[in-house]
Amino acid sequence: MHSKHRLRWAVIPVGIAVAIALAGCTPTELHGFMPGFTEDGQPATNRTELIAGLWTTSWIVLLVVGIVTWGLMLWAITVYRRRKGQTGLPVQLRYNMPIEIFYTIVPVILIIGFFAFTARDQTILETQDENPDVSIIAYGKQWAWDFQYNGEADDQSDAVWTMGIQAQVDHTTGDVDQEALPTLYLPVDQSVRIDLRSRDVIHSFWIIDFLYKKDMYIGHDNSWSFTPTREGTYAGKCAELCGEYHSEMLFNVKVVSEAEYEDYLQSLRDAGQTGPVTDEYNRLNNFPGTGAPDDGEGN
Image (cartoon, rainbow, N blue to C red; front, side, top):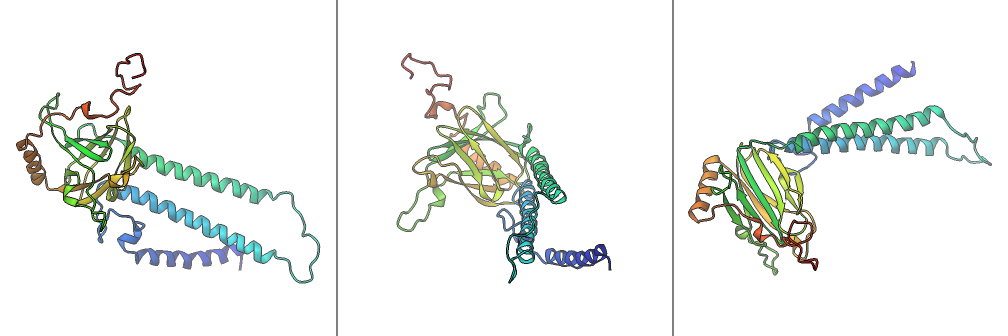
């Protein structure tokens, strides 16, 4: 039997075995055990599936490359090992052109492939919605979060806001008072754009189940657009070391119905928490490079 025929008959059962194995995987396993999905596979946002797919596919490709590489190493170790009674050095070859071409082309193809798929997905993730249903500004500060829910007025006089405090931790048990955490409300199935700003040092806005994070720092405003697709409460935190109490810079995200979201905004209006949150609370307002006037002494 020709070698090509033998290879074909070897590949068919392997392919069938792989298909059967994948068919038996749960949604959790198919998404690489990533957070952000329910047991039946429902994602937390319209971008969660995209991110998990890129991550899982990358690991599958890398695992296949690893298995092939390890297999070739073991094959070479076994076939070309020194046998009993052999002396001297084996035949030395300066090069093997087919193998060297193979070792050059395959990594190049892998790199181009990883770049292409990453660039494609990153373009989708980084495309900002210019007309979202909900527009929010999130401020990071040592060591809590402020949230402004933008209104329709140009001067944001109809905006509402909340200002958070650092996580309250019981240092005896390690429990965090969840009710005291800053909480960001989002309406389900509504497009959201969050503009990310810092009041002092570099922070990073990370909602764990949404599988995405973005840095926030003075001098450059980042944005993040997505649509929450599942109601629930999600944990958030700062993902950039920002000082002594970085680990306590926590917040919650509540994805609720549109009616409940509007009720929440109305409760902020009733509490008098209206108008724009200005930069006057930024701790580094007078630092060089921020546009503040210099008094001649570098201040």
